[in-house]
Image (cartoon, rainbow, N blue to C red; front, side, top):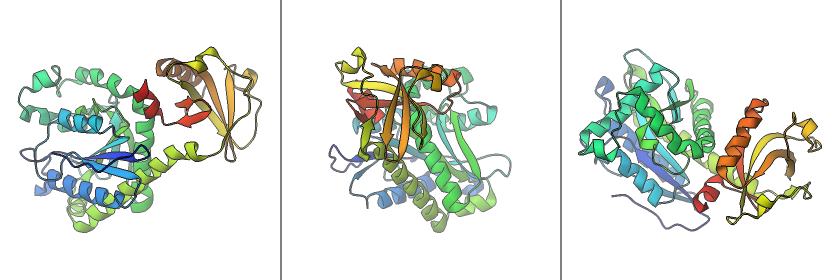
Length: 345
């Protein structure tokens, strides 16, 4: 049902999910087929990424077939993917236009709920959908709440990946920036890795629909997404490849000797200036660890033995004004990919 290349431990695996397919045509704005456009763009993204020897590509579908939403997540999980990207096209009853990226979360407005509702309604085409999705109702906003906790673990990295894709649209194609948003997409619910849903644009917009249905438009969109995925991968690996020097090795705790071998900390700031890692320099937060990465000094809060403890530390940091803080995993004195540590735990 899906294609997988050989994978080594150093390979970055991306699952590319072409939305809809088969009996599910997706939206038919201006009589275009969302399912065909999504598939064409997805295959083009994969073809570009395959030129990178360290990237492994897996497709949830490579032809016009119907794949249930939960099966798409199963494919990603079985493959132990590092990133899941689902490709779609939007529709609206206005002349709206522009590309947007989404991660799983509570919708902040009715518009985001309607987008998720449209994509989630495909489950009505599946047999036993009530049993397969635990009674989930795409038409009930309260059902979305049950989705969010499943992806919370990977939210930080999902937002990072989505933002990289969104900025690629803006910088490379001058597309209208519809920004990164959160909404309750069922296809993202059970994926245990950073996951992003991309709305390429609006088929209901006459000009944009024609662009997305054209070879030129599909090629340009796939190139922008592929560039972003490579940039995201490189950014994740940057911290691992840099020479990391701990400058306060005297700060140790019993939690650093956990059976899993991982410690979770919260990065609260980074600068080119070395600041003494004392609580009075960081609004009373402690303990603070300073790490030199290349020309930057990064400052981390805590020595948590679990991701849940680290998330509580992050909440404290945000309360103190460090709104851009995020959780980072350490193995000994090395920064490791967060999803690697979570999978091991």
